[in-house]
Image 1 (cartoon, rainbow, N blue to C red):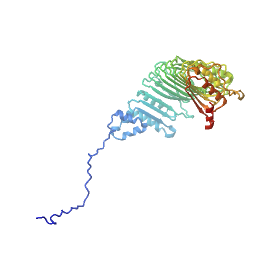
Image 2 (cartoon, rainbow, N blue to C red):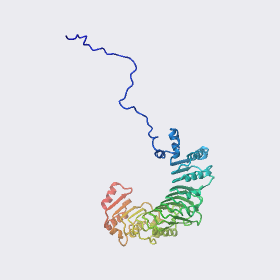
Image 3 (spheres, rainbow, N blue to C red):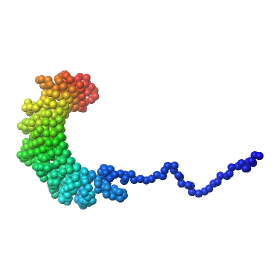
Image 4 (tube, rainbow, N blue to C red):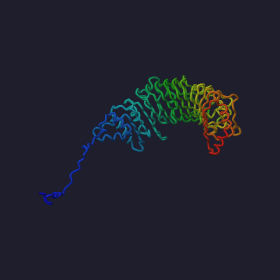
Length: 470
């Protein structure tokens, strides 16, 4: 028989009150793992080396694993504030830091001292500590105050360190270096960057680079200050492996011609020369047969004096001798306003640059078309020419001497008829002399592939008109 409706009724739903059961994830139970602390010491130290030194020290509070990790970081950067500001607190911090590091090696050491007063005796101790820790890269920076009463002489150990490969050093009125030893000096140093500002003893620069057997990069950047009357300065550079040389030097004198500065460089492996100065020293580059690139900038010459024709001729003589030293280069960049001076137009005899492939002439003065054609005459294998026109005239002449005329050479330069491929002209204003110059170059450049003209302060319509005329 069939069951009754009550028998077929489903049981009532049971309702209970209480706390819900915790959610059970289908995923395995998550675990917290300190993966960074599990890394090898070398990797952790490498990570910490990207932090400021003071921040790297604070990681000692993370755990026992990190307690002494900061003492192994190979990069150290320490900034010492003036004792007048912090009562010697940062200097004391440096003392403690170097003490607790123990004997661990230092790869890169950067010391910046805002003031010298009160800490001169400790600075050399900090430097020598880095030298004993087999430092490879050393950067010493001193921000001197004019009213400083103390004088820092850098330690002799700096010159004989056997592990040092890179050195950046600032010298000044209150920081100097004694003459380096004549042998065993900088035995492994590959890169040297010296900056100075009004050094107390200018003569200290003379022998600073006289023995650098492994040096490959040298930067000399500074202001020699006011030179004494008839002062003679002989700078010696002896670096048989030097490849790149940059000299940015400035000096002041009561009148031009009072000082005599000579730079004698024995650099048989030199490839790149970058020279900027305002007093035109006499240069001798012994054995520089590998020189490929040269950048010469004398644009700030005579900013303190208008110049006298006799002085200008002396300058030109030094320029000619410098050009003779670099005549083997393949790429040459020039800013030499004195070559456009009408006083020396017919007295300037430059050597032939037989290997020159690219020439860049900057700041051609209003009277410098002759210098352009002269440079074309002495570059028979030139393929690329870049120059700026009518930017500024630094030549010592009167207004009535100015001649805005294009004067083509008597004979077409060899480079125009045989090899010049690209020309780039900047500062173009569309003057009649400029138009004649462009027409001449287009007419005689038989292999020219590209002519680029960058206008200066010209409206679009005017530039278009010039283009159509060309």
